[in-house]
Length: 217
Image 1 (cartoon, rainbow, N blue to C red):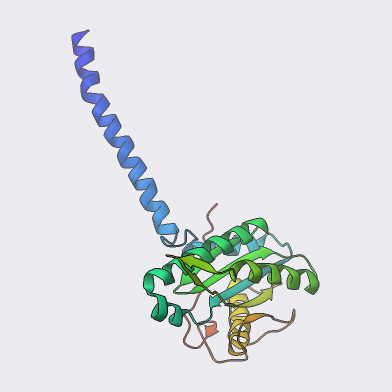
Image 2 (cartoon, one colour; image 1 turned 90 degrees about the horizontal axis):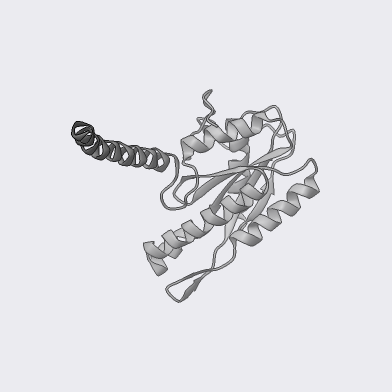
């Protein structure tokens, strides 16, 4: 009996240690998949899940967006305030995408992307993008200061094109509408692009992206 108790007294701390290590490892793995500031999927994880979402064959759109005059926010209010705006944008975009059976990610800096179920007509997509912009452009209150938020969104409806091509089109339309002061712009259904110089399937000067064959649940 005493030997059994002795064995248990040794085994229990080891088991507890293994459990804590397993929990730590799961958290570390989760952290590599999620952007630590916004909680959205990181670029690589977003690509995998976006490819899977597009493969379901529903009427979906790929969105690419970034914040207008974000540098001025950092310069005026400080980088901590800028982080607060990025965090709010991520939370709002993530909630909108989840409500439209989609997925959202932060690609880097003030650039975000999403894939969402938007229905089959231009009117549906217009209405949903207006709703999205209305959410994203709510002011952010930080340390008693009200910070205005403005976004530009480019969208491309899914078809036979892959994620890289759709992101390229969305990127071009986002850039064009940004030059006009913000809002959203939707690529024509059969538009192929590129209208602007591209590198790795994206507008020149922007990071490239591509679908990977591996898809996670």
